[in-house]
Length: 138
Image (cartoon, rainbow, N blue to C red):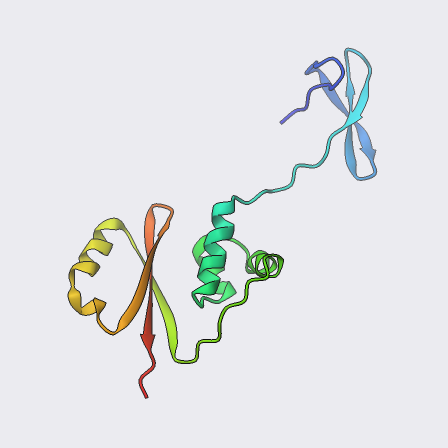
C-alpha cells in the first residue's frame, strides 16, 4: 500500500530515507516530508478466542499451533496476556479429531460414540473439531 501525502493527498510519493526506524516519504507535488507508522501483522480475534478455548480444553501449545496455524509462542503470549489458567485435570484427558460436515454427521449417528465421554464440537473454518474426554480407567 502506497501512502498518500497527509498535506495535499497527492499519490505521487517517493521514499526518502529512514528516520528512527520509520520509512520517510517525500511528496513530489508539495515537497512535504512525512513518515508513517509500521503496520504490524494483526491476528483476527477469532484465532485468539479459538486458541484460548483449545488451551482450556487441555490441548498443548504445539497442538494448537498445528490446528490453527498460529505460532505456539504467540499462543503462549495470549495465555499470559489474558491470564488464562487451565484447571488441573488428573482423571481425564481430551482427544480431538477434525471432520468435515458429512463425516461429523456419520460419526454422531453412531450412538456408541456418545456413551462414557463428554464432548464438544467447535467450528474450525470449513471443518468441525470434536473434542472428546474419556475418563482414565483404573
